[in-house]
Length: 166
Image (cartoon, rainbow, N blue to C red; front, side, top):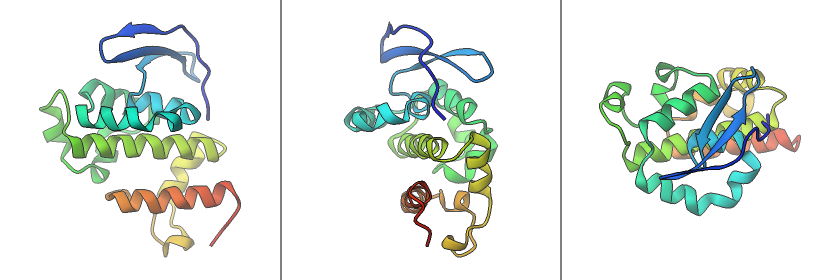
């Protein structure tokens, strides 16, 4: 699902704020290249991988993590099995380490791709939670606790996109 640009760019210390019009009519600004921005700009994000690597090295801010979980419609508790650290540890920090930041961006890119390929955000979330024959009866979401799992699920989504089922 792609969202339209609703506002102009504004300067910000770590990036550019981009105002987005959300499907419920709520306006929200995300920092350019933040994880939530990646979800909303799937086509734009592909050309900015070097910037995303830099963002991972600098660390994702807690506010950017909160924006992402709102953007993808999950709670922190829902996503805890995917993260390399506990939610209680994350609540104590204002900027996350490299490993946690990388997983947050992997999550953002996966949801971006999923929203683009599936008819709706809800359809993608349901697919993530449903057993898949091509994954040996496992739920795609259950494989997201490793980088290799993210690659497998991304490949599966691309197969769906091009109607190549295994």
